[in-house]
Image (cartoon, rainbow, N blue to C red; front, side, top):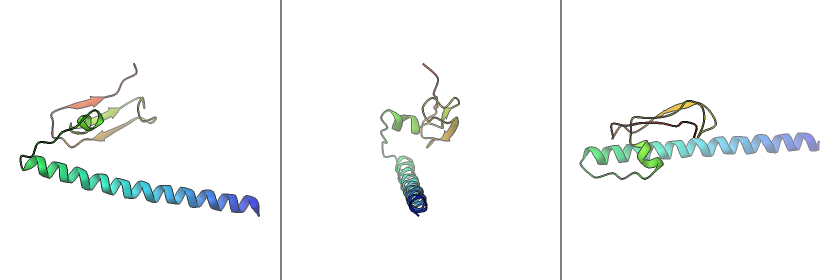
Length: 88
């Protein structure tokens, strides 16, 4: 019984984490859309550090140096840049 309850609790935690990640992704997409719209209207957009990287076309982490998993993400394409993470 205790093992089954522990498994149910772990499953509940995993489902809650997935729900929060989904909500965060939707919020981030909405904020990104706002930034692109404002930039198109001529409003200056400022990005610092990772925010600056996100203003470019892509962020590539081919060896998983930053993310732990090899991946390439689309940026907002407001700047003509591509960021590639490499081993130091």
